[in-house]
Length: 349
Image (cartoon, rainbow, N blue to C red; front, side, top):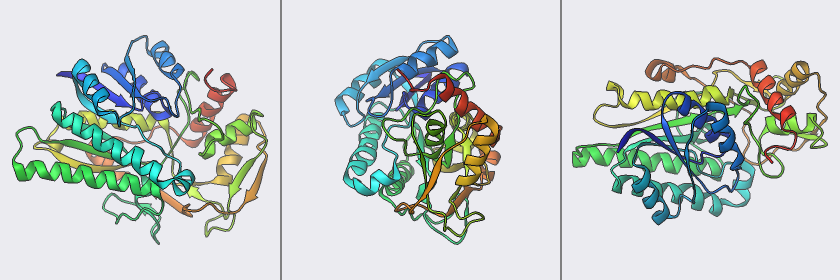
């Protein structure tokens, strides 16, 4: 086993590619597994250009147990960061079985292979959607879970599976127990400061910021703002936005924590990764126009099924236990997004 090697599932995607940059720059060796369903191989070429370092790539689906088994045998990683999965709330409401098959079953196969290879350090890409609706808008990690859409429920199911896996080690008094960090993301936006990698979704974007950027550059005609009648300060939904580079640095902090007393004897712990404050859709649009000097054509549309009015993180536990906090503000997120979009008007080609 190579203690300095990290296997990254979904590593060619938006968050995964930025994680690869930070891992390589922090001195880790990286192997990527990605089926390229919603990602581009070009992103990894650019990761290597940014860092001046190489990585290994395997085009494989995490549901393919034999392929994963072979990859683990070849690479011998000590740690896995698990990004691979489908992530669109609206699509999950339309295709729930697809989400459970990809996200939940895929994770089951992954941890089975990890256990067989005795690789038991896992950083899992979870989501704030596990919390669901509440009269309290700022979530702490001990807040009751109550996802209201299949995407969020798939993340909740995986969290439950991983907690059970960790608990079983204590019952069985396993010599090398699982060390698992459940990182609950809020809304990652932005791009690498070089403008070489960023968010490039297939088809029409599901997330707000790439949609705004594509409208501003003329790739899309108009942005739909889903709902202006929420009980918020301007009627539009409020979310906690976090720069993607800040987000992925949280994963490196989690890996470092595996070697500390916090995970001694094994543990499965959840951490919020967010800024701790929220911005509305209209505030995002206004900030984008201010920073870039570009106008964003938008219209008000009906609410989407499964969307919350407002949610943002309480990130204090991540600060206390992982020594992690955000460093970039909303203007940084907008500027880096526009730098990426301006340099890559058609995304990766």
